[in-house]
Image: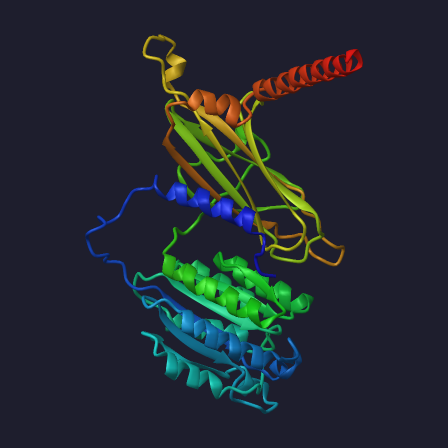
Length: 425
């Protein structure tokens, strides 16, 4: 599945962009950045099963080569990219030898597109599927330094080299604190492959995507490479609570969590007078889900009164669904002696989803959640925006209802007057 629901994704990206303005700035715009270039290694499964012809009328290997050529053309200049294979060289039946079959096809560094394409063109589906050993080797390829590092693993089957569990390998990589993210893509995956690849991605804070078409593969890999180049903030892991009173207190930033199917999770943010709270939440469907679902994000007071809400619905054609909200808190009135106006207000955030899944799909672990929290200066007309534009209380509903009633009465009176006038004439 590739993200196709543009309105929800667009709203999420807009709120995220607004949030960036509130975070501490780094070097000045006219100063050169000292941050090292991001590094990405593409890890491609070249095992025998890649001969299967079920992607757009051709083999999985053909689709992968075509996608790689498109990806290599689109790699940003600042990205240092490498390519590693698994199962590309040993065609025999000796398991011990087959489980060592991984090599670096193109070293991580400044990209020569012609050389990289030539190397990919030589590949042919061959042997085993040593995902665990390939991940270990890819982590060594990207070790050292302070650069943003990302592994993009593309496979059509589960690992054949047990007891070395690739999910455990991914957990070991995460435990080393390397900030190395592993994103996984499954080519026409079965249930076991999907579960294993999703587990690898989850262990390192990455994403899993199921792919059934060539354009989906090239689009998603390009997106992931671009994400490394964008140098986005790394989400901070948090855990929402079952009630506001026990919820974690969040500061401006980017957060990740897991939410069960059809669950409600709570978070808290302190908002000072004169500040505007901006929040976006994205819930990803990292497995097969039933169509027709939604995400609801609510801001309420500690006493349970709703302040504002944002919601979005989906129909099964997107990897993620997002909702956002804004709450401007009016500045303190200098003439008011009430001390409560000078203190922060605790705003409770409730994130809910209405996802469900077919009986054959595991519902654990929960769905990946990403939260963006920002606090900016509230607009001058914050009270008006809060009361009307964001649905605070029932004022907006009352005004609309009253306006509609008056318009209806006026139209009825004009119609009757017009009919009587025609009869008189």
